[in-house]
Image 1 (spheres, rainbow, N blue to C red):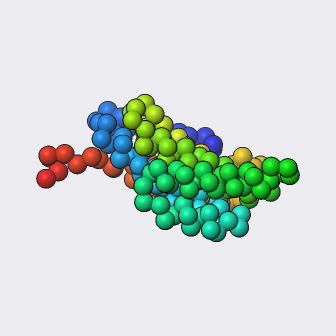
Image 2 (image 1 turned 135 degrees about the horizontal axis):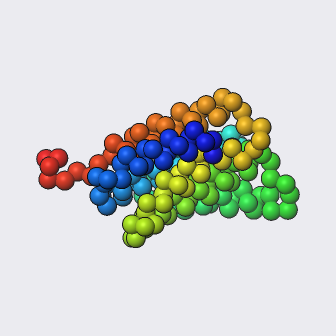
Image 3 (image 1 turned 30 degrees about the vertical axis):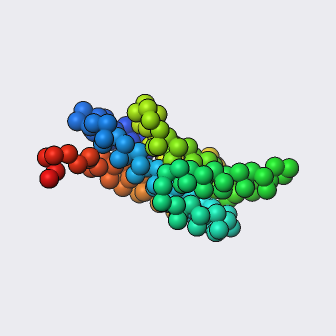
Length: 165
């Protein structure tokens, strides 16, 4: 992860920790899970030629099926290349799908200690191309912009209580 992105993430999370409740964390986890499943995994899947798997991720309406759709994409790619070197774009799609599945699973967890890890796996789904030394500068710029926007959006997510009415 680029150091500037890591610093921005840490600063954003530190700023939001003091006043956040469990309801806020659950809402943020769902936001990050859906971002990974409906956004990042489908982008990588389409780039690798897996349009049907991408569409399956995008159409899910509950976290459990979102997790299954992402995991299905991951396993489909894994099975396809089990006896061969996985091409670069397929590798990114595999990784993004795996991390999206984990994010969806964690967002639906009972234990808040697990729920709060959702953002980490969403971020890993986003930055999957950074494992490659030849990352495209346009792609790196897109990743940076999406990461900053996602962090700022998540910080503003608050659970509605009696005070919201």
